[in-house]
Image 1 (cartoon, helix red, strand yellow):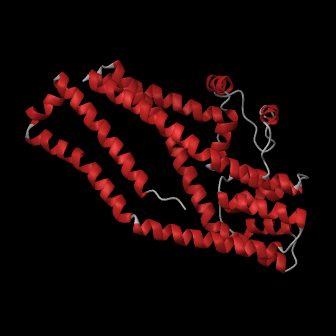
Image 2 (cartoon, rainbow, N blue to C red; image 1 turned 180 degrees about the horizontal axis):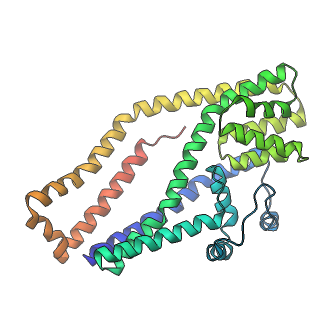
Image 3 (tube, rainbow, N blue to C red; image 1 turned 90 degrees about the vertical axis):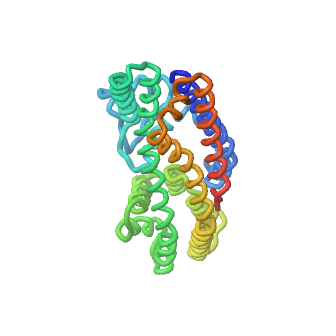
Length: 323
């Protein structure tokens, strides 16, 4: 049993490392394009100089979660975790997220130790449980960004109509707060308030692009900044940009409809081995115990789980078509 846990732990670490490396390599070119469009392509020295600056909008409470705050300061997690929480629409400090992960780890370790009396297994359960708060916030972030992208074309057309009616661009941004729902209302209200308090509109829009990591928002910021430098009909540009975004949504929906059969097939093929294992555990327990008590069975079980998950990742990659 311990050998199986070790195999699963090694596989999980390898898969996590592979996922992080592939995610970084995949997003490096896209991040460079976004930074170029939004005009935030700065040198590393400037980024390091601004890393220690305090945010005007939010202040961290240093008196709470001192242990977690030391971890954040030690590994310099504050800026990245802060942006991650801000994109999820949560008003947490980075130290609070770290503190929550530590509590989940401790609670899961104690529970696993009480149920299994195995330190290795309890540690594995605790590591998985410590990532639950991050997974929950990541899902909230994904849902919030998806909702923002749904409302963004309507907001662009609203700004275009407002400018044709005679309103200034900054005033049109403020009017979005009264006419639209969250999260787009809060983001544009914050952009307007930053500009109204003296921040140049270029920097306010660049901060909006940083808070909302969407390629559509970066195109919007790039179009506005380019129009301010070269001139042109901004209302017409925003109308065309809204049309392009809507067409992308339509194409994305068609692709999801076409790939629905592949996604269902991948889910069914991945669930069949687990379902068969559960049925055999109840119908013929002696046959299944071989995979847990025998050394050869442990190797076979670890290899089967590893290959099954690799196959699921491959099938998911095939049906995941990005637009």
